Amino acid sequence: MLRNMVTSFLDLERIETTDAKAKEVRALAERLITLAKRGNGSVAARRRAMRVLRDRRVMKKLFEELAPRFAERPGGYTRIVKVETRLGDAAPLSILQLINEPVTFKERKARDAEEAEPAPRKPAPAEAAGQPAEAAAEAVAAEAEKAE
Image 1 (cartoon, rainbow, N blue to C red):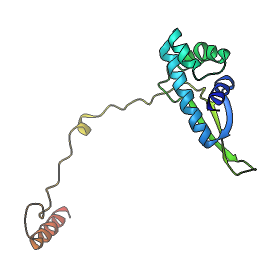
Image 2 (image 1 turned 60 degrees about the horizontal axis):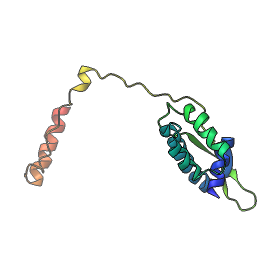
Image 3 (image 1 turned 135 degrees about the vertical axis):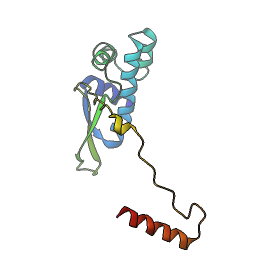
Image 4 (image 1 turned 120 degrees about the vertical axis):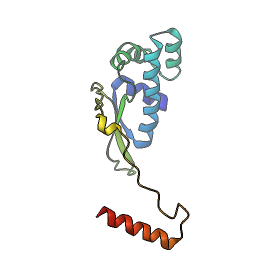
């Protein structure tokens, strides 16, 4: 059943199914797209893809259309959108679709020299230094007075 669903999904690029099936199909489809990207159209990669796929036309589409489309994308080729519940058995339905937007990366901000310096550490509590509890309370009160 999953092989048929993956084949239909890669052919149509969008299917509606239950949440659980969508998650399983997503895993197989992402693995196949990664295989097509890495395989560069080799015979071995095509044979491995045909272990799952049921149609040579879909395999050709996978290697010639989908792999180049996702060449720059490091992963996450699919999206699951939760839709509604099915009337007959109240199963949660989802739409599984391939992503068409190009990948964008956030630019990292350069740190200032001031931010790169570590912040000064607070002295350890008096209890950790081995002082009695009363002395620790006095030390905490003294630090609070200094801060004011």
